[in-house]
Every structure is written in structure tokens, then in C-alpha cells.
Amino acid sequence: MTDGTPVPYSCAHCSGPAFATQSIAGRRLHWDVHHPCPAGPVLECGRDETPADVRRALLADEGTHRLQLSGGTNRLAAMRVLRTWGIPLNGLTADVTGTATEMRLLALLMADAGVTASVQGQGAGSGPADADGP
Picture 1 (cartoon, rainbow, N blue to C red):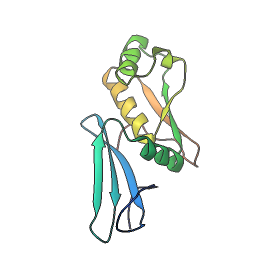
Picture 2: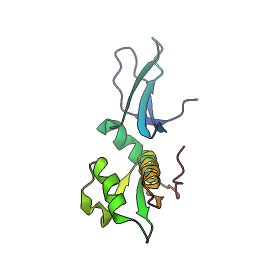
Picture 3: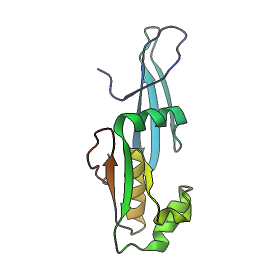
Picture 4: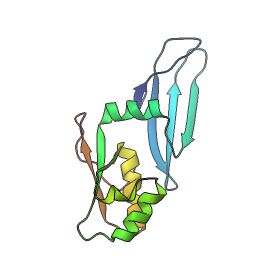
């Protein structure tokens, strides 16, 4: 049994699937793609920015998740966290969305800055996600 979300993958030796996951380690986003090829397993991994095709597959599989800030939020602290993620500062009034893991990490970083935030799941049959990290 392989854990993860099926993702497109081109292998010179087989036509088998690849599977992707995201995780949080050291307050950073980590991603990996594992392809169990009969010629030998292949593992690609990285951190911070997940490749677009992998991210699209994760969003399609788990649905989009949204960060919700509490009513009494320290807006300046929240803006600082959003800016470090490259989210426009109008992100406080717009939906901040992404994969479940991306939003859990963002909620953790908000908590580190003293901002209360929660993560809510949307689409793909996802229920609410917790903001406590993996």
C-alpha cells in the first residue's frame, strides 16, 4: 500500500503511478513524490514551494483549505506572516487558501506570531482540518 496522492509521472521504465505528500518539519513545508518503479524506487523531494503539478494534484484530491483568522486578530502581526509567504497584504480581507498542509503551516506561523487562526476544509469531500500541524 502506498500513501499519498496520485500524481502524473513519466518514467522511462514503467507506466506506474507516483504518489505525493506534503508535511511540516521545522516550521517549513516539505513535499515528496515517490514512484515505486520495478527498476528501482524514485523519490523526489523538496521544501517550501511545491511543484505546480504536484500541488494541483493534492488540491484535486484533498480539496482547498482556507485559513480563518479570529475576530480579535492582531492585524499587523498577521500581515507580517502573510508577507513572508508572498501573500498580498489585502490577504486579510480575501480568502487565503491552499492545501491542508500549507494552511496548517500558515496557522502554526500565525500562532507563533500571536495570531489565532483556524483551518477549514472545502471541496473534494474534505471536512474541517485542524491547525495543530501533522
